[in-house]
Image 1 (tube, one colour):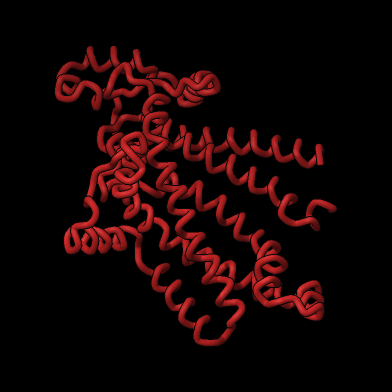
Image 2 (tube, rainbow, N blue to C red):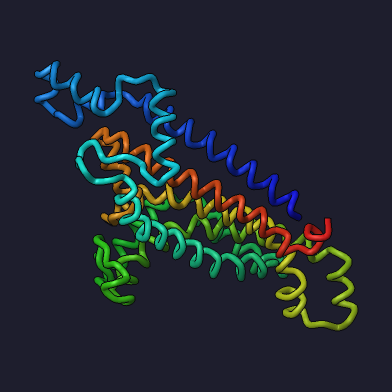
Length: 317
């Protein structure tokens, strides 16, 4: 087990190095001059001042040198400062906004699982019958509709028509759980629909295969109830693929909330990333991109290590 853990950690470090370098490279190659974005019209008219700012920001150095300098600071948690909001550290911006985006992602995953697991189990248990057909059709519709269309529909229904929930803005948890849920439930639900469709189809297919295994047939021969077999014997080994997709999709949700956060005017990482791109604020773009990539890689490594806790066959091997 120690050897496997060491191998996973080495792979994690190598992956993080590759991810940070590629993120830095793609960000550095974005069109536009950050110095011009910092100075605005004054920078275009004053060549001397433009060169001075470029030198101050280190933009005259080759990309490999800039990356090494940035990486040395990033290891200590220093992701630089915003070019536009001078004096505001990128790490502080991420720290202030990650709770918002993380809450949306966690809520979306929880909503998706609450809907997907019963639908997937029901579809496998009633394979090729009308409950399976109905759940499959619902999942297909949810998968086909983009999350921003779902968000617009929810705004029309609950904000414009019923007037139950605000159409935009965000109340933090510190302002009260109820007020927070009023502003978070719609965007989280909009994000959850696509995830629900993916999870339910995955649970259904894996559960169908598990129900054909010998240990399930033996449980049936003992006279155990179908409910007990489904929840205690079949669901756990059928959750390995779900765990993998869960880890991947949670990391993707952190970066995939851009459209939803913009639609609902939510002050999360995605909303700040859009602003940084429009302002050519390279350090903020780079910091948020790398942070999301690192979280994505770390979560998937943790999921790999959790396999042994879920499936005894993996633990023994």
